[in-house]
Amino acid sequence: MSGAVGVSGIGGVSGSADGVTEYWCEYAWLPGGPAEGVGVDVAGGAIVAVEPGRARRGTTLRGLTLPGMANAHSHAFHRALRGRTHGDRGTFWTWRELMYRLAERLDPDAYYRLARAVYAEMVLAGYTSVGEFHYLHHGPRGRRYDDPNAMSAALVAAAADAGIRICLLDTCYLSGGPDKPLEGVQLRFGDGDADGWASRVGAFRPEGDHVVVGTAAHSVRAVPATELSAVAEWATGRPLHVHLSEQRGENEDCLRVHGVTPTALLARHGVLAERTTVVHATHLTDDDMSTLGASRTRACFCPTTERDLGDGIGPASALAAAGVRLCLGSDSHAVIDAFEEARALELNERLAAEARGRFAVDDLVAAATDHAAIGFDDVGRIEPGGQADLVTVRLDSVRTAGAAPGGAPLAATGADVTDVLVAGRPVVSDGVHTRVEHPAADLAAEIGRLL
Ligand SMILES: [Zn+2]
Image 1 (cartoon, rainbow, N blue to C red):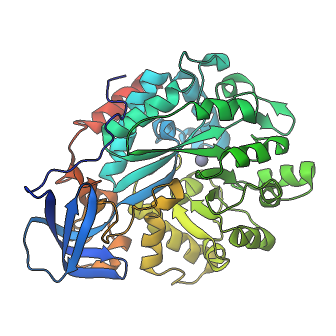
Image 2: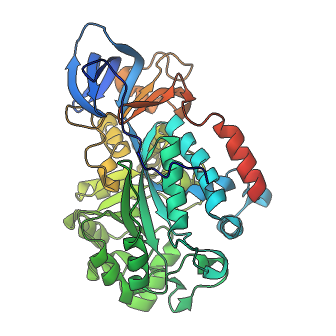
Image 3: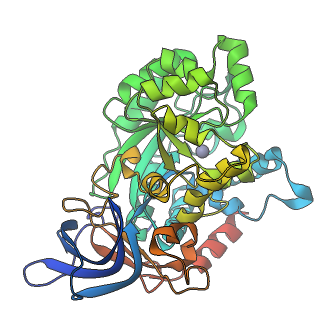
């Protein structure tokens, strides 16, 4: 692994003598919606002034500038599976078998190189933070590395070097199913029990303002009910994420073993709360949705992965109506494109409901920019006091030409991103990553070595 383990983070900004850098956005997506000719002044990595209707001065950002997007759910290594699991049509099990084979081959150095390229791809597509739901903790057969958090450190270093914020959602993964011990490659995921997990995570104290250490319980399948309360208790004050009801089989197993739905089981053990995000939330009952809303839990949808894996379409608007805040993730990275995920939230609903107009564009942008779900509370809005994470998309590509700025998020793709600032620092300029020289070549080389 190369140096720079996020010691300095990704903060800092170059600017004028008084430390302020002035940007002029042709259009900017402000908390009230898109505005024209917006001055945005940045100092010390934060936004210090926002002025719509300003005469052009400073650095011009041509097109539409949005707040940086949050990728609230990622398993970085799954990126290696893209385009490789569809032979002979491919099933969920074809996918999982290859995912496990891949997991067997990764070590901290390889994971650093792969993740750095994946995170570079994310920034190029408009993401300025990632919630890394990380469970590949240990060496082959579960052997601890000299530093038991070596894999976590590799991911944090990869994020620093790719210029993206990271919430390392260190994941508790203890069993292969109800009364089923871990076996095979799963041994690399386990810490014995919740206390073992908590003491390892507690020892991980990375430096840098680009990193937050969060927590996760993998699922009700992988964390026994007897351990859930301990995980929730230890996670107090940190983001806590958990996969929930992605496939109907998980619900059926939970009902058979515990007599309640996974949502009810999580509620019973104190897992659902303001800082908790359930991931997928695809197959829910009305009671489940009320429980999630009443506890102020968030739900993270991963539409491109959910369609890739054939999971189904979750009840996004019903959850929103129940008071659940929505966020988005690219999960297995079958696609990495912040715009595609946001758009799919609406379009999937249209297919399921046979009706248009389920969400306003502003709702989709809010979901796509909810960095608070992964612990970055002051990121995701273009307003004074917020962090200067900005993403500019061109309005003159073949995809976006002619679109109204207010509708551009429904037309743009990650390929239309020209500029990305993270904490005021340019990480993408004119569509080129400023730190990772050849992300595509790096991806090809690393995936070629692994598979
Ligand atoms: Zn996941």
